[in-house]
Length: 334
Image (cartoon, rainbow, N blue to C red; front, side, top):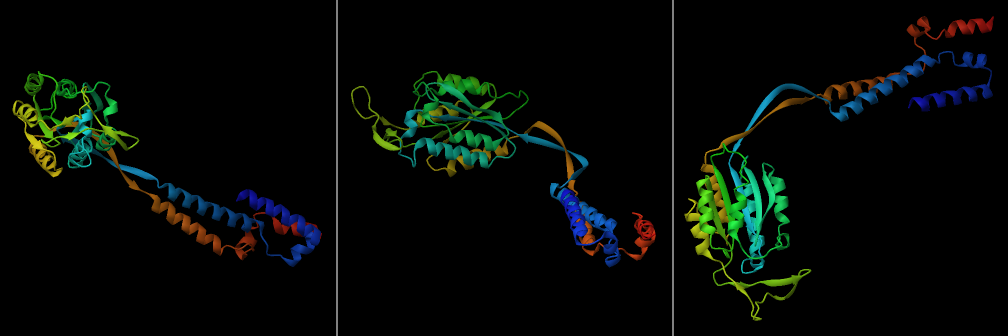
């Protein structure tokens, strides 16, 4: 704006010289003031500067607040073996399991969550964290291709869960295993009992039907047949309730039927809500107040003042004569 003003000012001066003699122009327009023009520009620039500052919304700290977070630690162990692709539960067992975990997380408070995926081996999908949004995002990417070794080894998930609880002072720890219950290992119950001795309460959620269902093989979303065994027979995968119930009973937890999403969500959320909360994090932060209104007020004031300013001399300005315009006129007349 300043550059445009001075370029325009120079252009006006050159045009005036072409039009008439400067002494004659001063007689024709004796009240024109360069100072008033510069003042008008300065006020407008100030007004716009304050308006821009108001958009930035400056803030000022007023006091420190202490935020304490209390909760329990919950680790979800999700079965991602091929059998979880069976479609006896819509849309399939794996997607139903993801829905259950997401709904449980939505109903948690400041509790910390972690996610493990397992099949023939167990892998950490997300370390224990208070970031519930991140846990749900990672959960959506869980699929059988994440685990190189297929099969179902629940004991692998139980062993990995031992390393997840990094707070020794936490008195309430929960492990939620969501699976169709197929287990190819024999020492699962003993490993679960060891985990229970460390203060971890295990909940198990069973998905799928006892009747069983074939495992679809899909390519780019299109059905390409069903999984078969070495004899060429279609494999039928069934929910093994007894395994899941035994794990829960030997760890002081509970087994919940997961074919209806509401069942495990309500039961597990209720157990977590009734558990004793432990303080695991304390943060201090400043409570800020918005200050944009001051800058907005000054900006509007200067913009309005600029409207009432004219490029003509006023009586008090003629007396001050900051640019010595009267003396220069007199000297020229002489």
